[in-house]
Structures are given as structure tokens and as C-alpha cells.
Amino acid sequence: MKIPQTVKEINRNNKNRRADQFYVIFYGIPENISNLFGKQVKSIDRPSINFGTAEISRRSNRYTDMQEVRFDTINAVMYEDEDGLTSEALFTQIYRQINRGRDIFGRWQQEDDQKFRFDIGINLYNSNEEITESYILNNCFISTIEFDQLDVSDDEKETEIRLGISFNNINYSVVDDYVETSDAVSLPMIRDRNGDSV
Image 1: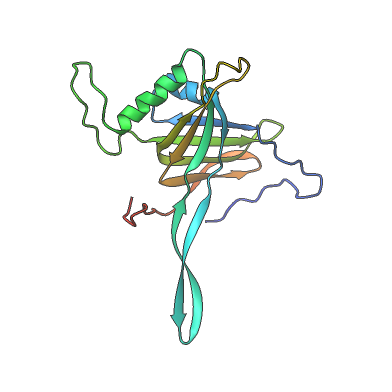
Image 2: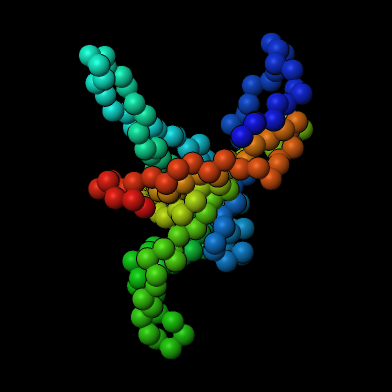
């Protein structure tokens, strides 16, 4: 697939990207919770992509071959609101992941193994508030959650929530002239820690 070339000229006058020019969108969860999570995100890692390698011997020569692609767990930090809405929504998601939720009749839900997963969209902007990079992390789930320590000696500190988020794939939107297009590059299916297909 041919990747469109931007008309933006590469020169020494290009501005450096600011770390605060981004917005996070959560897909696959109720809209009100998605809006809350997007507003509360303080920082988030950009995804790291690693290709496995293997040494291959052929006709007395040794080559390095590319193997399956793997994605590292990303870290996100959220502000914690004093009404506990953010932590309550996160705990609800955790309960869904371990099938500990009850329906309106008090019955335990036996959810499909993949039903609790969600997607995360990350848009990066330039100083003109134009999207310059956009990707969606597919089939996400919360792998770790940590809360700040409560401390009566510090009445100025704001508490935060740190998340580890694992995912299976990435859809990367190709951007031409700083305008998001409908083209997306989907990376190959990966394997989990046990080497099984996800």
C-alpha cells in the first residue's frame, strides 16, 4: 500500500511536538464512562512495537529473520476525582474482566471471554489543533491498577490512578496533509506470553 506523502516541508523550522497535545477516546464502554475516562487521562504511553527475530543458517551463512510482532503493555495515569466516579468505573471494568458482575435479577453473568475488552483511540495534534497521528489499540483490558497512598500530612497532593493496559493489535490511521484518512494499517495477529494465538 502506498503511503500518502505530506506536503509539509521537512526543514529545520519544524516545531517539536508538545507532550500535552493529545486526546484519548475509549470505545466499547458506555458513552458517559468513555467521556469520563477521556477527561481524566493525565498521561499515556504511545505503543511500543517489537518484532521477534530468529537466527537462520543457510548455505554456511547466518541470517536474522523477522518473526511475529508483539506489543508491550502501555501505562496510563488518570486523575482521581473526589466523588470516586473514576475509581468506581474502573472497578466495574475489573469486575467485568473476572466475570464477577450480577445482572438486574441478581444472577451472575458468565460473559464471553472477549466481551469485556474495549478499544482505545489516541489522537495527537499539532499547534493548529489538527490531527497529525492517530491510532486505535484493539481488544484492550486492564492488566494492572494502582492507587496513590492516602496521606493526612499532605493536604495539597492530588491522588492519581496508574493503569497497565494490554492489547492485541493496532490500527494506525495514515495521515496526509495533516488530515485523517480512512486508510488504516492493521498489524498481524500476535501471540500471547504462552506463544498461543490471541
